[in-house]
Image (tube, rainbow, N blue to C red; front, side, top):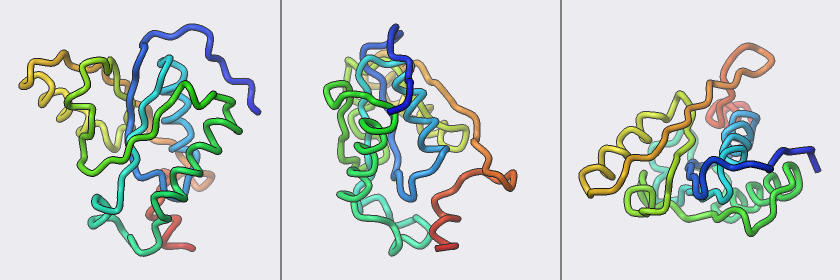
Amino acid sequence: MADFPRNEFIYDLIGLGGTFDQFHLGHAELIKTAFRFGKHVAIGLTTEKLLDNKIMKEKIHSYTQREQNLKKYIQDEIGVSKQNYTIIPLNDPFGPAITDENLQAHVSSMETYKIAIKINEIRIKKGLPPLVLIVIPIILNQSGNKYSSSEIRKNS
């Protein structure tokens, strides 16, 4: 279990979402960032319904496998208790982020922050407060390229 700071929280509830296939350091940074800022983290995990546009979608692990990998990383690697997070099936790109009035912030990567902006536009139209958007930088691998589940699938 890693020494992971969870002492002071800025937000009671913070969210993020993704496919989290071929779990890599970019995914890890996204999740660790959410737990640094949020007391409770809601993770939207894409279902098969949203995988049509993914490269080599036939190689994407099942929802169950991806969920197990997330739980293992969160609990075993960074030592966060299951009481401090929820994994929610995502059947659309936005999930509860556009309806949950308790959600305060959203974590995304530079690659996906446009979805977070769209979430805020929808929230505002619905009369909900916009979320604080936390954007992490692209995480590079040893070759100087961004970590990419699609690339990992292509090379496996």
